[in-house]
Image (tube, rainbow, N blue to C red):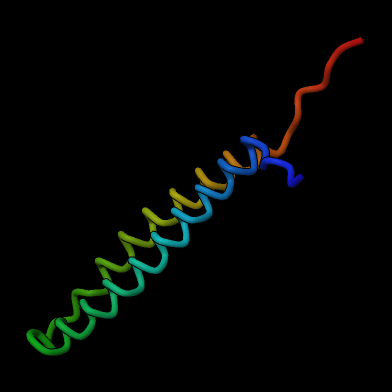
Length: 80
């Protein structure tokens, strides 16, 4: 009989899926914005500001993921 995954594993897996979705959405939307920027205002490149802001938000998401992953990997030791 297969064992059920631990709650910590499920938490890490859910966060990993959210982080991956965030990264894919960021890349897709930025590609669309680059195309729109080149099409409608090629003289003024504004898409890099959007990319920097979104990347900063992604870094915050990554930091939260890292912190909660490490917290869920540690086990409380029982005292004798």
